[in-house]
Every structure is written in structure tokens, then in C-alpha cells.
Image (cartoon, rainbow, N blue to C red):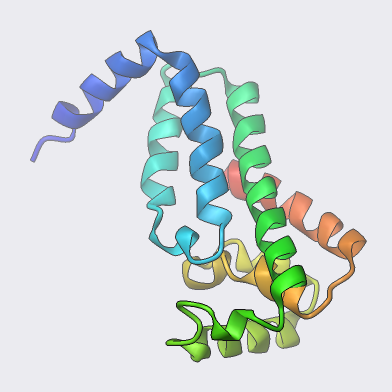
Amino acid sequence: MDLHQYVEPLLHFFSQHRALGEAATFTIAFLEALPIIGTVVPGSITMTLIGILIGTGILPLLWTFSLACAGAYVGDWVGFTFGYYFKDRIEGMWPFKKHPKWLRSGRKFFDQHGIKSVIIGRFFGPIRSTVPMIAGILNMRWIQFFFAAMPAAVIWAVLY
């Protein structure tokens, strides 16, 4: 399998449709941060493609970086808000009803690391999308979440 046979058509497509590349950047970062959905979105692969688009000059660095940060941050806030408002009902929802250990392990991680779990959790695939939701379930203060989620999204965007 030659990687160029897949990358070249994508580079050509996005050079003709830059706005779609920008929209994809935000959307991928956003979806990867959402509870459950984030565990199935191939963020590392797609963000690598975004990096190639930046490196080839098809997408502008600062704007694309800003979109990735914003997508990750907004996704974290959606997860946090979902946990905050539906905390008592989440255990009975799919897939947590079938897999309660996911919530237990997220709570254990949060208990061990506190506010740092929002930053640390962003870099561990299995818990990346559930940590913000757990923060909401456990009534983390909004301001604390704000100051943890912002640097987490920026560092994540830089590293990805």
C-alpha cells in the first residue's frame, strides 16, 4: 500500500476546497472531545492529515490551529454540560448502563488527579471524551473547568 495514492488526492481536493479543510479541523476536534463519540473518531489520523495540509501550505497555520483549539474546547464544554445537567440519569443511559465500569474508571481517575484530570485526560484515548463529562457529574465548578479545559485544548492542538 502506497501512502501517496491516498494523500495526493486529498491534498488536491483540499487545495481546491480550503474551507472544507477548515471545517473538518473544527469538526474533528469537536467530535473527538464528545463523550462516547470521541472514542470512535480517528482523531490522531485525521489531525495528522490536517498537519500535512498545514505543512504544504494548503491550510494556514494560525487559523487552523485556532479552529482545532476551538473545536476541542467546545467539545469539552458540551461533555461537561451534559454531565452537569444529566448526572443522575447518565448511569441509566446507553452505553453506561451496559458498561458502568467506564463511569467508575473515569471517577477513579478524577478522584486521583482532581482538576489536573481535565488536562491529563485529554491525552489518553479511552478517557479523553469522558473526563469532561465526569467533571460535570462531580459538580466541578465552571471556572475551574474553564481554566483546565482551555490549556488542555491548546496543548492537545499543538501536539496533534
